[in-house]
Image (tube, rainbow, N blue to C red; front, side, top):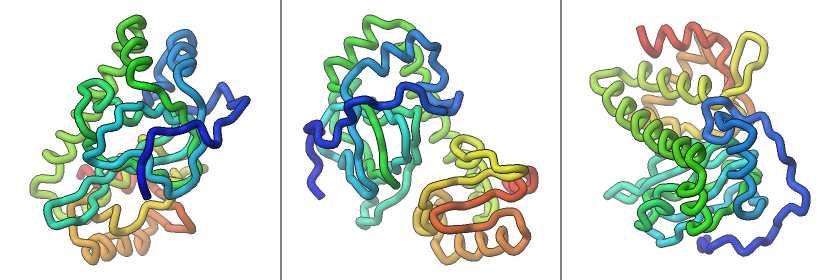
Length: 241
């Protein structure tokens, strides 16, 4: 699918103004004033599931402020495999690196389901960062946090076996993006076993075996387009013991 600058197709005339964004997300962590100023940028656009929004290596520079929905960022390896790099959802910013430095996209971004986002031109985004110190600081902190997570991911996985790495991946996603459901946490988007394997840095059959053991022991259960962590405490013990 070709990737183009959003042309406004599917724009909402009256988008919702308030969403249940995680406090850990960029938008969720802003105060009412700075949040309103950020969300005043660009235009709200709806995208269908499976839509490629950005492609690795292309020279687009727009930014997406995710309002509702989930996207995945993937990269292509030297042997032409797609590797899942990160998952982002409502409240997160996507594409800010290319907007800041003007360089080609570092990853491909694809919707995991219906998505509503504000599409912001690079010039408007950079002007906001210059004029609004609070938003600028929040964006800087968000970029740094992503880099820290990436570094911690590489360090934490050194020497870990696959069940531990898988448990850490699931724990991070559940604690960051999951929805509380009784005593458990639900991850409500399609996360395939090949994608789990790429996040865990392991072969798919080995991850399949580790996931089967987590299900057998009652730590997680899987359903249609979702994973439920039945015991977050037990998952944390496996991940960090």
